[in-house]
Image (cartoon, rainbow, N blue to C red; front, top):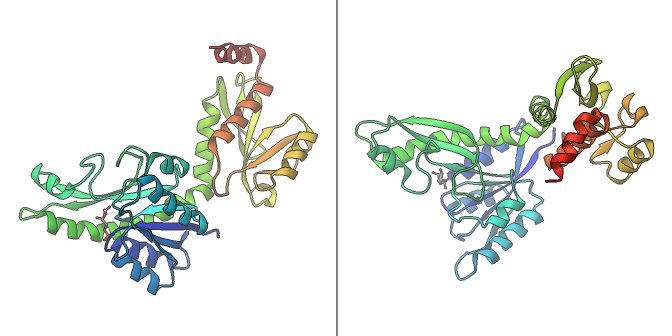
Length: 320
Ligand code: GRF
């Protein structure tokens, strides 16, 4: 099993980092922790990580610009060959450029039931509002603070005698259960055939006049009418003993197919049967799949078999 390489950024006690780290030591963990980095040299979490033999990195933010500080932290990530960045009480806002470069690969845990109470003092605000529950949310980090897609939440009942401190303490227990599982699910979804199929399906069916249709026991996508439509994509889940989960799309022919496979064997392969007629396999169960690239291929493949009345339509739309 591929174990995703995860780096964790902390600023404080690091109890979530510890929960993530100890969960990762199980044999069945989908991720391993390759780096724990902090902007605070005295962050107690660093000592925990060091004690477990995990690489650590410290770069104080004091007296340096955000850009320089972020650049140093990012270098540490790259040096550690991290595939994902998990924020666990990291009290710095990452610059937009950093977040964009790592888009879809940064997760955070926030101590509220998002979208309620972004920002600080979440527990006090939940109590003051008379909410029945507080809690925590794991979300994807986007340039806008605490606003990315929520992946998982844990709810914690608010008692009548609650203080922000007492609520914070129980929310932490819930966080420690929630975060490792959410990270595990997130990093493994790129290897999960059901998730990959759902993404391909969404892109394929977004193209004009398309429908799903099985072919030789595998799902595929056609353009045109139900009766006379033509296939422009096939989804392969480790078909014919292949190790890949892939989408097959049409190239311009055998020369192009072989060139692609030779130049980028980590992305392309020549599939059984379909390969003979110029279909190339785009490997999806690998780190860092560029879904825009997948979309471009689907569009191109669609265009190569779509009836002229449809391609003309698209051509016209693109001129504006
Ligand atoms: C947690 O409450 C988390 O929700 C927030 O920061 C806190 C980190 O605590 N983002 P710890 O350092 O993991 O103990």
